Image 1 (cartoon, rainbow, N blue to C red):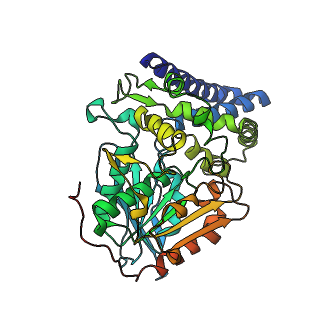
Image 2 (image 1 turned 90 degrees about the vertical axis):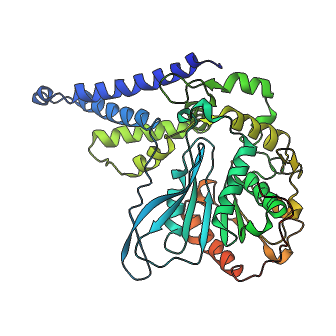
Image 3 (image 1 turned 45 degrees about the vertical axis):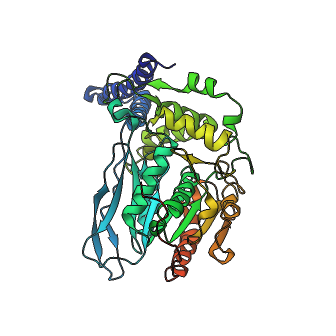
Length: 423
């Protein structure tokens, strides 16, 4: 599998499906056919429209689409996006709200690098903008990063987070969603020991696999069912000639998308069947519920092979975070060194990706944090997506997170001087 030919084959299949959809839509929409109405032509056009759009989205990075936000003064303020830190594998960006005073709450959202773009957290960003200065990690698609930029594994990812937190300073409140939760915890511990003045004020971990073995799910237990050799042989490919990252070994987003869809194949098949019927009846819209969801869901990005493989091996197989034996460039990170950061975990009762028990394990690891600075919330009836972007987040979890941030806003820090030279 580790050849450019296999990567290009997947892209060829995707491109062909997009072309077939576009061709079917164009042919069935030929003006002369309107003289003899035929329901089969209508269905053909509907199938073509849905198919073309779906396969086209798979290689497009979604736009943030956040143009304005309503503020306390009752006016809509324009939102612009500024890059605070630019790096080859990801940027730190800031959503600047024009014409309002800077908010006291400074929030860093750590977005997952698990196959989707950071725009997956668009609704999370929108919900926080009225009350916070929002920053987010914007990870890049590995297929667009030249091989000359080098590797990017879990240690590099963690050091990126360290640098981002140092850039934003000790008043920042970090919220890590899903996959990055273990590495964000490690980055905070690394700062606590190496550069304590730059530790965040609070750390909120949402639905992350801190201890995957606490309550295994089909997703988190996958790494235990295959060897690393099998995983590398089956999942890793080289970027084809079409992209800047030609030759880079990656875990392709299209392969990840196939895994996502196969988990709930019947549900997705029914959703697309229903959408084709809605298009045929003229009941669909460019921004209807189906298109809003699948425009984001189908937009996938490649991960570097070393990041994917090291995540499986070190986070899931070896449980290095759960066992508190994670190392960065040979330095063993000690999570117990975190003493001044208030830590909150959030879990969903019906989360089938990171089940309850996996994330709250972080609190037991933070032995240096006083109990009064620890908090956990289990959201009843919520699934994985709902705890950071659905109604459960908007109505219940978001207010609790903001309250947690405010409760620790004026708490004095006791960290001593830097123990080692900053890196």
